[in-house]
Length: 193
Image (cartoon, rainbow, N blue to C red; front, side, top):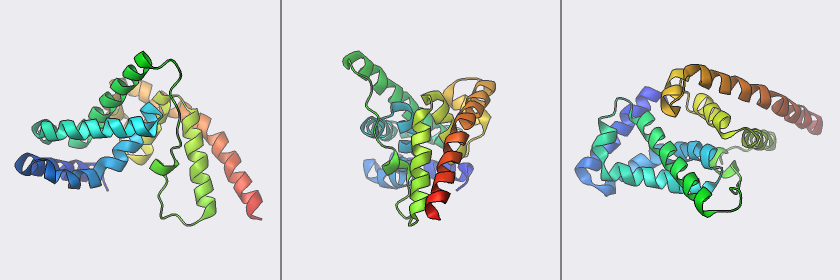
């Protein structure tokens, strides 16, 4: 699904929410929740916190649907809302938690359950583990670039940083990911023989 089409669909769902109320949220949830969750977990590093961030953003959308509906890019606006909610959750946790944030498995969020091949599941696990090893700033750029297919300019706008910063984060992330993924791929081939 192309991003402009996604923004158009989101705008339509948000207009329905403004006309029909919270009952119309189901369509928006079905369309965007998993993608928003995948992004939120790159920031929070915790599934439950990511779910809280997405829920807070969707509740805010129901409370103020016009803000999303009138945004020039509703999809980017939702991503920014989830990012802001994720960062607020992290700030609260840092204030109240003495320990480090708990890292949970990303497998349930990013892996597609319709994958039947063990090799593909192993490779997905390797990708997710490799993503977890990156700094948050780099992993969120990778997710936005590869899975959400945003341009570097769109990512820079979303993350409030320069396009050069986004490009360098992406480049560093890919440099770190490639050896890990190459090693996993070679191991999978060896075990497959």
